[in-house]
Amino acid sequence: MNDKVVRRTGRPRLDSGARERILAKIAKLDHAPAEEIEVATDALRDLLRSDPVTEAEPEPAAQIDTSDSDAGATAPDPSAPPSPSVHDSWTRLRQFSLDGTHLEGKLVITANRSDPAHGAFDVLRTRLVQALADKGWTRVAITSPTAGCGKSFTAVNLAITLSRYDSCRTVLLDFDMRRPGLARYFGVERAGSIGDYLRGFVPLEDHLIRPGPNNLHVGDRLAIGLNDRPEAYAAELLQQPETAAVMTHLERTLHPEVVLLDLPPALAQDDVIAARPHFDCVLMVVGGGMTTSDEIQEATRRIGEDKPVLGVVLNKADIEGDYAY
Ligand SMILES: Nc1ncnc2c1ncn2[C@@H]1O[C@H](COP(=O)(O)OP(=O)(O)O)[C@@H](O)[C@H]1O
Ligand SMILES: [Mg+2]
Figure 1: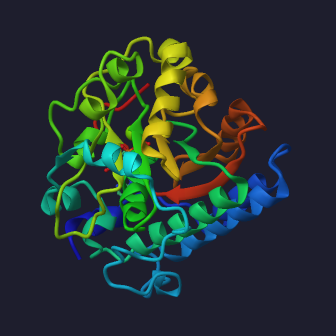
Figure 2 (figure 1 turned 180 degrees about the vertical axis):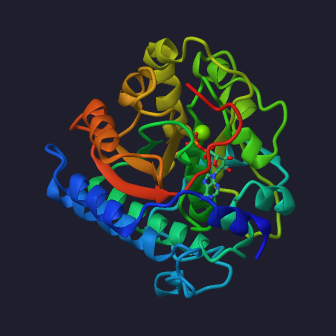
């Protein structure tokens, strides 16, 4: 195993009692409908089972996705082919190169799939796509109670595994505008300002990028909006009518089945509340050994009952550097 796995063994862990307490707390959240709770706890249990550190034989993703490379895997609903104009809009997006070594170094474990933990993201992808289709939703906020729990890690890995669904169009946007982090995961420099895109200063095809040809089987129906500079007034920007107009334009132009918004922590500042008009539901990333059940409850309360928590991802992120809000 590579050193990343060794490094993971040194992380603080939730013992099984703490995991059960968090699960029980989630199940008791006042305003989370029973249906969503079901998805949340199932997704969480799947992720726990596929932990490569604690399980000698991790739960294989093969139950859901048997192919070694699932490029072109069965799509959620291939019955609605994109119109030529949607196709043209996608082909106008600039392509960028994927570097497998860089991605592996950044723990993008879904890229080369050598770490068995990638199977957890396949499971999460399948559950998410089903839940979105059932509800008629597309826009998913990825947040956590506090910083460093692994929101961006989850967002990138989920986006890559979604890109392997042939007729699923996915958009991934870096909405953590005070601490933009997605560009580093992809190794993209001079990613541009997502603030300028949301203000309407930069057209969609000049800001969003898509993966170029690669041998990692990462699909090219993944549009990524990165950011290379902090926005001091992120909450205000998110509430501007221009931002809503740009998001509507994005959806009309690219017709995504899934839009992933990599958000800031829910308990830091009010950016997540300001972003509420832009998402339908939430994936809550919980940091093993970091997040308390009270923090989960408070984060969920702040987000509001009309934005259901569709899933809870128990991740085991390290806190590195001076990452702080
Ligand atoms: N499962 C994991 N195992 C090891 N390191 C992780 C894991 N998830 C995240 N990290 C690391 O933790 C740090 C914070 O993760 P990140 O996704 O950027 O957090 P967030 O976006 O929630 O602030 C990064 O250095 C990332 O590489
Ligand atoms: Mg982040």
